[in-house]
Length: 565
Ligand code: GLC
Ligand code: CA
Image 1: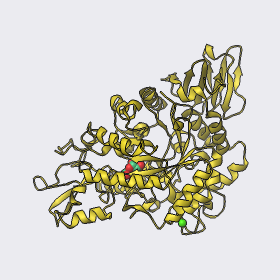
Image 2: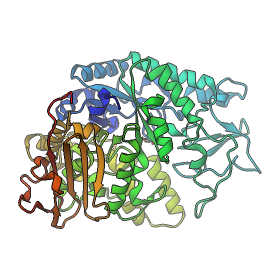
Image 3: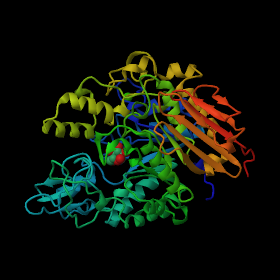
Image 4: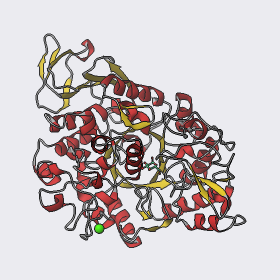
């Protein structure tokens, strides 16, 4: 595969509402990001991706856009946006915009026009159907709970919403919709955007016959993913966006995708096809739940994570490019979920970075993970804000489940766990805002915050900085194949990366136990690249490594120093 600039970069994801509030109204904003640009640049990332900050009634955290061309006033102005982009570029970084193209807000003018009159040209911008047998056109479930159809009495029709009912799906079979999208993307390019993260983009094409599906237990509705995710026709849309926008303007893309097999994944991302640059397969983290249901958790078992990672590494090697992530605004905090936040918070937060970011792909660091932030552990149900959580809660209470059960569940599984405000200092409101934050801050902000960590060479933040600096330019990391070792071991996550003579091995003890591991023979004489506990306990004679609880070590041998090799 020929080398592209984005193959050796790292991305920092911002969820703007919770990042930093510059004016004391309790809401993170664009000027807040501008004030923290040095912090982000010093971390050593090359690109910033921000979740949406466009005009939105905020029914789904800004992923319900009412106007792609206006900045939502709670975040600032178009001038702030311009200044933000300039500030990013002047620090040598790039900006990736989140583009929500599967749906708009129901408050978008297109949808309002669509509702006003069946003859309106905008009616066909969305997916309307007549009811069947006195009910919805099909029994498809919304991803956020309940039906995926909403009835409009004035039209005597239903519209499709795969997500919240305030997020009607756009009709990509209408060429005018595609033209509008292209126009929006091109205008943003003129503003200085360098790339796009394409939201929920593998859902663009829906089977127009809308067949009924197997209902879920205790419900009329069922998951219809097979009828709307990754349908073959979608390649045409990707190709068109690539040819007419992305390639033409030198923009890079990462596509949020899910539920796809190996062949489809390669079909999307194989560079020879010219569709998408990289995939962000968000279901990779569905390893501690039953099927599609994030509120049906199962205990985390390391082999499942290893197998999911090994699968994606092999699918994409030489056939595309992968985003490497361990958390985002849709997930609980990685440390609370996969690490040991009680006994070894700092060590296990560093281990997660070591385990993840020497794989092949582009590291995506979700705001606050570089500080080792945890879930906020709220004490009351009214502290939760997210539509997915609140819908699931009301369904659960309706089924007669207890509020204690749901408090525990939301504290472990909800998206709110990852969108609590960033802990900047040990001061009031964790230094996030001088006013009352729109969401309560994490109670551990006195111990875990950016101000303390910036001064501490042994902090999680310092570890991230070190790791990102060290990772850059390593041939085995950029090009090498990934081979997982000890795949069935319940505690150890170990993989090798090899390119020409260079060999790298990342060793991670995901447990509170001491473990002995014998380094493979061909790594004899390897150098320490990074570790989370200083000098490893290693006996060169026997090649035996005694790993301490949550110890993470990466070694390298025959490091290639000539960049052209
Ligand atoms: C993506 C986003 C998520 C949003 C959904 C609908 O999965 O990451 O936050 O709710 O798309 O836009
Ligand atoms: Ca603000």
